Length: 375
Image 1 (tube, one colour):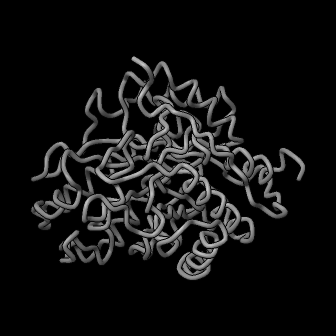
Image 2 (cartoon, rainbow, N blue to C red; image 1 turned 90 degrees about the vertical axis):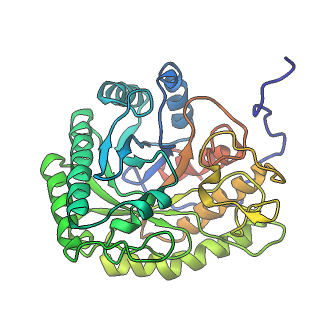
């Protein structure tokens, strides 16, 4: 064997273009969100991953524990040993992270054994089915709310990318109605209230933003403390990437949809970015053959598709542009780099910033935003 796959370090220098960085102080959440999923073989290596995260200047780590949709009609949501982290696994992970000086956030995420859009489309979705789904989802949330309380997690995030059919006005992947009950807002209010009764830390609602805002239950405005807006939207037209163009792209969407959302809810915003290190990820189309790959194609480690090229510097430019745009907007209260793979360092095309030039960008920005180093 001559070399490890996906382990060739970048030789391109990282030049961070930044003006004066405004110090936000220790209350600013500067962190990394782990990739959803788990395997028991990860456990011995997590200490190195958490130290790597701490070395970027992060003060927060977001765990994304999963439960699986193991049955469809009626819906069953349950952990599968060996595929989803169990209580002991998560408490050990939390302890290791805290020993590295990181605050914990818990973001429970649903996992599917097939394409989520297809799963929702073929589900029964009648009144009895929806009652069962909300009951099972509540059990899922409360389990992790109790876990967050026991581990001393400072933040608890509700929601994930697959929940659009369960939100007010919800639609399926084909654009048709999900047949959601008319009292969906009230159901979400009860869900969030039940979490609040078991967990006293920061309660956050996820808003995945791929170019337009998803529906948000009215109850969110009064039932949560913050919004986590995770951005994966196109930023530029096709062409060579420049940080100033990417920053203009971020600024445009922040000052339109995201600022309007903040003003409508009067809630602080945590900004997240989820962009892979692959050519074409920033103009809305990663081409493979004659098709554009879906956004989720690069969320798993070591993805390989025909005609795609690794683009480490492009990912670093996006991180730098996002943080520069954040620096000019005091209403943004945190930043998460989403998609971190904790098992091993992979210099691949995935969203993970670990050991890539993007992590050097975080290493420059985070200590300055937190006031840990002088300008």
